[in-house]
Amino acid sequence: MTPIEFPQQNKVLAKDQPEYVPLPVFMDAAETVSCWKLTIIERLKLLLTGKLWLRQMNFGEPLQPQLPTVDYPFGTVELPDPCS
Image: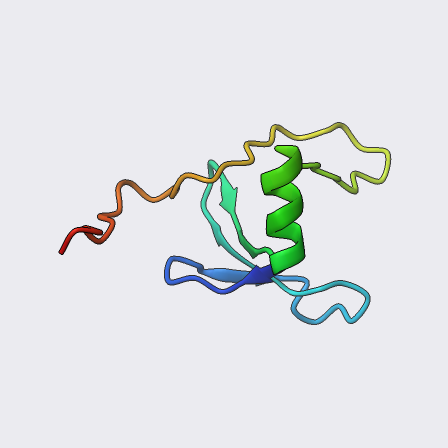
């Protein structure tokens, strides 16, 4: 999986930290949202197993609430009509 840029992002975490992958995010006082692109192999594994693992590096600190989702987090988005 690779973090990807998206229109609503307003910050890039770890931008100047070479030991980490830069993480484009939308961040406000309530939440931080990032978007990830899966490789074709990762998509197939998810399709076949139905499992998504969430690995967090919390470095001994308390775990923060998480909400993995496949739903668009910025309101509704209109999908193209497959019949048109």
